[in-house]
Length: 246
Image 1 (spheres, rainbow, N blue to C red):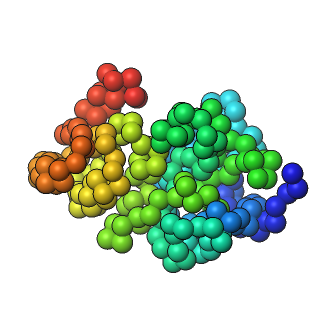
Image 2 (image 1 turned 120 degrees about the vertical axis):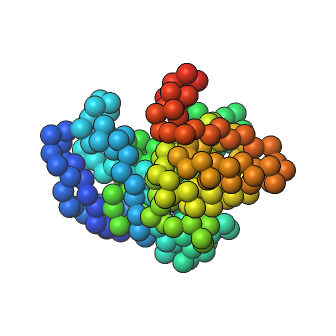
């Protein structure tokens, strides 16, 4: 397969396990017919990024560009894209592709696909090179792995939410540690999650008033949604470990 047309974008990359991240230029494929090109506005910093940059999981290829909590603005779409338009605010999480044909993919559980493509650290089948993450100015992702974000949700606050399996990646329990002053953002995200048809979601909300409001939203939604609530991040982590998720 011939290499697709590419464009250059700025990024921060680690050149080795011992190197600090440094400014560089990377190549992204130009959007294909089902691709969405995104100007990255925010990218959360996850501890997974540090493990990856330092090769603590022993599969990193360098130069390595971490980042899988991406929020940005659509700058171009392929001719076959139906879900997104230029100018919309979108998110990209831990995955950017999968085989689409296996039983897990057909069930909406792409995170279990043997051919899943992670946002960084997997093999990019288009470029025949490792995938490069969101510590960059731009990224191109097939539309099936792009999430539209609500207009009333702060893009900066939304980015860290993408570090766990939401929306397209969901049907696993997820948890959300947050400061009390982020309660409004969490409630907005809860409303959006229900609208997306997520059926098994666990939130960690530190603010008791926010927990009560969230429960009322769930009850009023009249859909099959399960939410687990925790008073602290430590309590949420304990729950994850007890249930084999942490």
